[in-house]
Image (cartoon, rainbow, N blue to C red):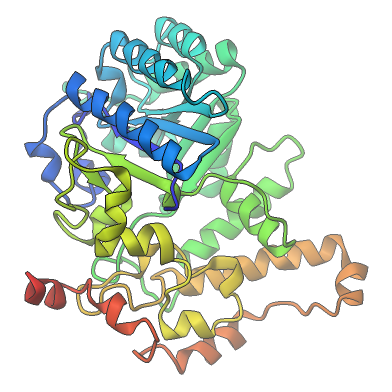
Length: 411
C-alpha cells in the first residue's frame, strides 16, 4: 500500500464567502451533507487505524495534514488532543517519526495560533491567489470585503515568528507571472507551491492546441531562475531534478489518503473534478482500515498504478519518465475515463523542453559528452499525434472503466 500521509478534513466549511467555492470544490458538493467538524469518535478511529497501518506496513515516517474547509475554525483543543493521542501511540511506535502539516486561508492566523503551531510542531501553509486583485476577486468575507490584506499580514507574522512562510497558489494565467512573483517576494515567501488548475477533458477552458499554461510557466521560470534570492518552487525543482536524474525525496499527492469529517475514506481531493461524488468509496474509518481503499478500483489505480497505467500516447512518449503522464485528474473524460493524455500534454512538453534548454546552457560540455540532444516539442507532438485517438493501451479496459458510461453500467 503506497501512502504515508493522511489529509484530515477536520472542518468541512470555510470562513469566507467565496463565489469561487464551486471551483475550489471542483464541482463536488458532497461536503454540504457532511458534519461541519470532525468528532472525537472519528479522531479516535483515525489514531487507532493509523497505529495498525504503521505496524502492518512498517512505516518509519508518517504525516498528518490538517485540512478543510478551514481547519482554524476548529478549536485549539482539537489540535492539542489530536497530537496528544498520536504521542500515546508513539509509545508503541518508538522508531516512527510523525509530522504535522496544516493548510489555511490565513484569515484567522495570529500569534496565538502560531504559538500553538510552535508548541505542537505543526507546519502551516497559507492558500493565496497571487496578487491582491486576483485574491480579493474571490476570497471575500461575509460583508464582501477582500481578505488579501489580512492574509498578507498573517504571512509576514508567520515568517517573523517561525522563520518560514510557505504558500499554495492555484495558477491563474490571466495574472502576470511577474506581478504574481513580485507579490510573493513582498511577502518574503520561503516556498510557493504553484498548482496547475484541476481541469479535465470535459471542462478544460483553453485551446488544447495552444500552450497558454506552458507560456505562463516559462515566463515564471525565467523570472525565478534569474533571481539569486529566489524562493523555492517545487514544480520547477522537481522537473530540474528529473532532467538531472536526481531522485529527491518529495511529498507527492498520490501518497495522501483523505479522511472526511464524517470519517469517510477517499482518494485525493483533486479527483473530485471528475464528477460529483466521484471519490466516494463507501468506506468509513469506523468500519474499515486504510488499506481497504486499495480494493476499490479508484484506490487501486490512484495509490498504486497511476504513473504506470497510461494511455497509448503516454506510453509511447519519450518524456514519459519525466512527466509520468501528468496528474491523474488531468487525464479524465466522461467518455473514456482515464484512457487519455493530460489536458496539459502539449504544455508539459514545451515546459520540459524549455527547462532542459536552460540546463544544457549551464553544462554544455556535459551534454555534449553524454550526447544528450535538446528536446524538440514540435517533433514530439507530431510523433504523438499518431497515437492521440488510439485506445490500444494494454490498460484500456481498466482505464475506461471510470468513464461515465461504464460506471453507470456497473452500477
